[in-house]
Amino acid sequence: MSTTVENLAAAANYLVRSSRCTRLVNEMNQFIKAWDEAPKLYAGDLQLLNPLIELGVSHKDKFDALLEKVYAARQVQADTRRTDYQKELMRRIRTRESSAVSLAEWLRGRRFTPPERAEFAAQQKAQWETDKRAFVERNAKDSTETRSAVQTFWHMVDMQLKEDLLHAQQTNPPPRPAKREMQAA
Image (cartoon, rainbow, N blue to C red; front, top):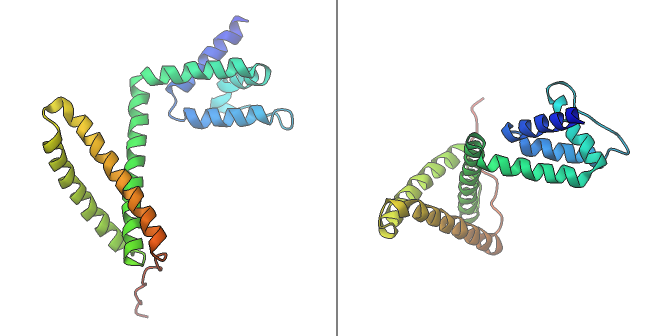
């Protein structure tokens, strides 16, 4: 029994440190659901996760409880928190930029070419940066309120983009494809 507990602890610790934790947990849940039809276990480096799959097959409630502890441990571990924060931040930035480009395309009635898209995105980022600085100056009395003001600014931008894009999609026809330049033969 102690070997099983040690193996489960090793598997849980691996998940706590892994940048692929969410993907691995989803994959293990799929293995557990399909166990009766097609039992699967990991091989190679991920073989140490097999005791978790076996636990999930025999005691799903204990498996879920252990995963809750894994996620709780990930919340306090600095290096994974930083990695997860960076991923989430970059995802929000890409989504915001994509929404702004989509809105501009809907309003102008045609899609951007790649160079136009890059130019528009650069101009929009510069405008947002200027607006953000002005918003922070107006709303943050000291440095401790700056972070909150920045978060409020980005939330307002995201909500406005969402609202404007929805309105543009309801009132304008879909954008036409970008004009392709003729290449000399």
